[in-house]
Length: 370
Image (tube, rainbow, N blue to C red; front, side, top):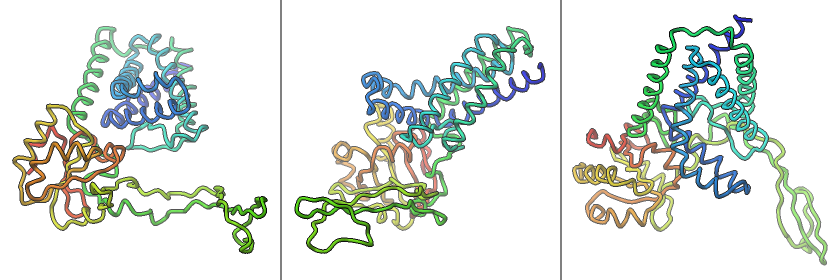
């Protein structure tokens, strides 16, 4: 039994550390996933006031959750304070199992984000993983007496605290700059226009259509190959999903740039020849980030086109009016969710060459842009 328990110890400890670190390189990604859950639950009528409050604090919960995962994983491997650590592992695993089961059986959320964007798993895979993890945690909780601490309590305690400081520092760095490992479709080197296209191996969804017509107060349904004559009046068309397609969503499917009169200008901007820059500002970022932004705009190369991409075009229009009066600055609108995916810092700058992302910087690194 001792061998089994220690195998479980290593597997669970390593999994928690890995899961935490994968999300620590992009804590905003977990925060956005949490907000997705809170939005869905609020829309379903579950404690709407509390869900709205939790939505606003999602980033704090994300940072704490990631740190807790790493701390528990390290503590388990070291054998530090095993009893409370085991109970915390059980509680967290039960919580994860609840979330993955909700994703799987409700169908309201596409994925749980258990391993961030770097390792996407299907709902079935994540739910199965959590069931296995739950079994391993129960083994540890029931037979923890077979686990021996690696070092003295003092040394183990210092190592646990050191791991906590390390993961906190990593998250602080990433939130101030950009993810140290970029697993999103907008990473440097990618062609945005190509990733907006449907994958070559896409299998479209298959639908069955029924047409409803009326005549003399009577409504009747007809198949597409047996439509009625012109004496019937069309009422509506119904469609039913017959077979779900596969790989039929582009990696970038909601990145649309519009002028202030609502014209879609995505293709025109991304086909700009040569070098140009996209400055993403979802909303007003705060005084420090704003100073960095205005400083960058003042010293930028005025001969290179700049496009300000924002979810609040009217506000940015007023803030950048003086800059707009100069050459090569335009403001375009984009959905806030799309901007959150494209720019993990607010603001952020992309250096572009046509539709290809050459480089990207957070506001904290604007002084490095050349």
